[in-house]
Amino acid sequence: MKNYKEPFSIEEIDLPYPTGEAVIVKIAGAGVCHSDLHIWKGELQGFPSPMPLVLGHENSGIIHETGEKVPSDFKKGTPVLVFAGWYEIEDEFTLTGDQQLTRSPVWSGLIRYHGGYSEYLYVPSYKFLVKAEGIEDLASASTLTDAGLAPYRAIKKLRQYVSPDEWVVIVGLGGLGLFGSQYAKYVLGNKTIFVDVRDEPLNFLTKILKIESEDILLNASKENAVEKILDITRKRGVRAVVDFVGSARTLENYIKVLDTKGVYVIVGLHSPLGPQIPSASLVLKEQIIMGSLYGNHKELQEVADLARRKIVKYKELVAKIKLEDITKALEKLEKGEVVGRQVVLP
Ligand SMILES: [Zn+2]
Image 1 (tube, rainbow, N blue to C red):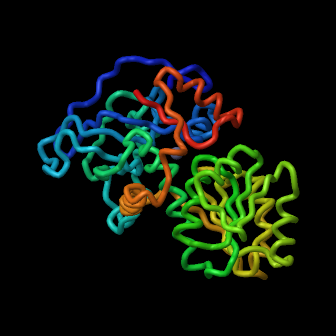
Image 2 (cartoon, rainbow, N blue to C red):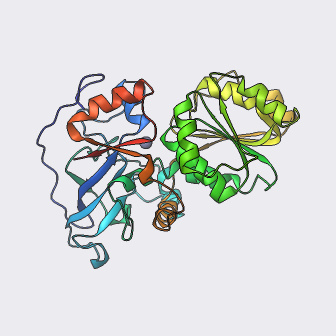
Image 3 (tube, helix red, strand yellow):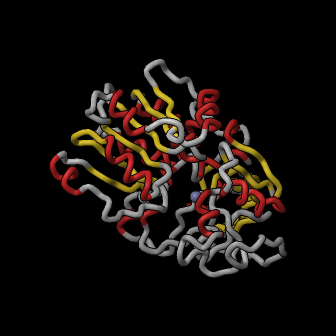
């Protein structure tokens, strides 16, 4: 990416030779994230840094070359998922297992390092890799490192707040929401209300996930989802909302369906908390609004395990595209024409 809103160009660039803990990964697949669209449109201030930069932070591949300090566990030919929460200096967060909360972030394809819309990816340490042996479709499994990871962390956070007989609402069935819906059923196992503004992803969800008779699918462009949810819950509201859109509008709307002691989780980079937050309701009902960033290295291992055991579906969500079609892919994403996740095969 050379400039905002300009078509991507394909060029030869030099990658550093891997020394020490560094690894070169031959990319199998690189998922096209909604964040890349925001970056391309110039809506995420400061990203990428620097520019030009190769985007792509959702990557999988095969180890191609290793530095002299890389253990034999990560030898040439090993299939891997690339954890994207890279950092430069250990701190209290990286040392306690929440690497993505680091005080010195250097995310691939976003800050300092080139990303995976490329044949090869330079990874500064093998510690940012998760082995992907036994995973059926390595290219599609790239989606597990972001679209499949961020919702997993968000849903897991809810476990301490939500009882098995309570309602959970999933807002937005894009790439993350389709993964999140699966975790809502398999990790939490609650009655779930799935909301989107398009019929396509709602229909698609019924093909990849067993929708129980008590679950509800709502198209918010056709009906008043907030009123409907309040009706379903006898005006009480729900215990938890997971917002995969994270816009001011979804927050403003769906905070209205939170019950007393309800939890509202915002996933992703957009959390425009503004004056529209009903602070009185937060106090009177002891509600919680929280953010959830990406996932940690251990959680990526857990997601990989769920994929290996075929508990979470990922292949079904993927449309594979060519490297030269990235600009087109972002345009499709912008028009809302994508159901699931596009994955670049370099
Ligand atoms: Zn992303």
